[in-house]
Every structure is written in C-alpha cells, then in structure tokens.
Image (tube, rainbow, N blue to C red; front, side, top):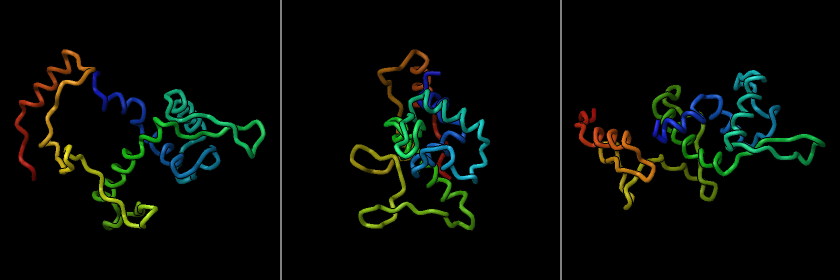
Length: 161
C-alpha cells in the first residue's frame, strides 16, 4: 500500500513496539531495566528488540559497566517517534484517563510549564483540523495515490459534532 501511515504501522503498529520505544526514551537500555508492569514475556521482548534493531529504530551498543554485554538505544529514526508517543499520550489523557486525571504531566525542563497539546498547524501557525487540509500529490505518488487523493478531496465530510 502506497501510504506512509500503513508503512509506519507495519513497523511500529503493534503495541509492544511503542511501549519498548517509550521505555528507551525513559532511559532503559537493557532487558532487565524494562518494568515488569509491561507484562511482556522475555521471548516476545527479545523478538521485538531484534525487530526494532533490524528496522533501524534501535541500535545495539557496548555497555561500559558490563564486559561483553550490549544494550539498546534509540537511533535518530527511533527518537523521531517522540511526537507520536506524546500525541498518543495526550489523546489518552483526554479520552481515557481515570476520572479525567492524567497519570503523568510532561513539563518543559527550562521553565517547568506543562507542554502544549500537539496539533497540526498551518504554515503561519494556525491550528488545523482534518477538515481544513487537502491532499496533494507527493513525489512518491502512484496512479493509485492519485485516485485516493482525488476521492478524498472530492468527498464532502460530515459536520463536526
């Protein structure tokens, strides 16, 4: 499928992968550092770590404090999943938090203020909904992509609730 969302989900769409990436962003570098609350079996974790490494999201590195041992860390590709995780967290905080109380707040390290919600913005900074965005042919478009774009751009969307 010539769709960036589908290709991204192929790599990180199953939930263990994003939770492992989250833990790496929290500083975990070894299997033993992953919290037991994840509930992931060691064999599944090993397979997921290997897959994330093959995909270039994680990389192995030698642990200085342990002879002949390797840890895992995020690559640039893996680090760029941060906004995805924050967006999922913010969505979950809004719609799924127990009693409407998010379990964690993300705060700017320089001023201790809660970060703003992520949003899609226009070139000038105006927030945009999906109703205010049109699809355009990208450099990797195919004939099928052109049909999808035409169909999407000609569709009348239902009004917001």
